[in-house]
Length: 158
View 1 (cartoon, helix red, strand yellow):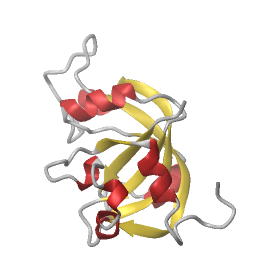
View 2 (cartoon, rainbow, N blue to C red):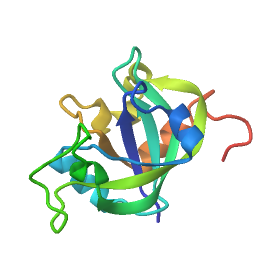
View 3 (tube, rainbow, N blue to C red):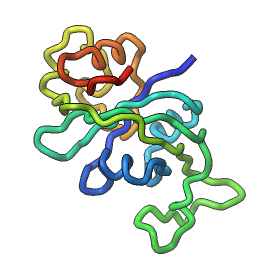
View 4 (cartoon, rainbow, N blue to C red):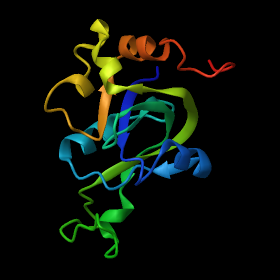
C-alpha cells in the first residue's frame, strides 16, 4: 500500500520543472537526522507532494514518486559539494536519501495560505509551527483532500 509524503525544495535550487525535465533525481543534501529517518521509511511507489518553499507564496506545485528506496547520499562523500560531510564514512554512511521521479505538475499552485483554511489539514506537519523538515509524512486523508481541490489537477490526470 502506497504511503504519502511531502518534499520541500527551493525552486531556484530544484523546481518541479527541473524534475519534469530530468525525470528522476536523488533527493540529496538533506542534513537532518529526523528527515533522514523519514526517508528510510519510504518505499518505491510511494507518492509525494512537491512543495516550493522560500518563495512568495510557497505552496504545493505537483506530485512526485519515490522511485528508489533509501540509499547513501552521494553528496556526503563529495568534497566539492556543499553537503560534504567529512565525518561520514563509506562503510558507515551518516546520510541517506531516496530518488524521486516526476509524476505531474499541477494546473495551479496550492498556496500555503489556502492549505491553512482547510479544517481537515489542521494536523498536517506542514501547517504546524516549528515543522521545517524538508520531507514530511502526509496521511491518506490529507492527500485525498488536497488532490481534490478545485482547479489543481490537469484534465486527464487520475
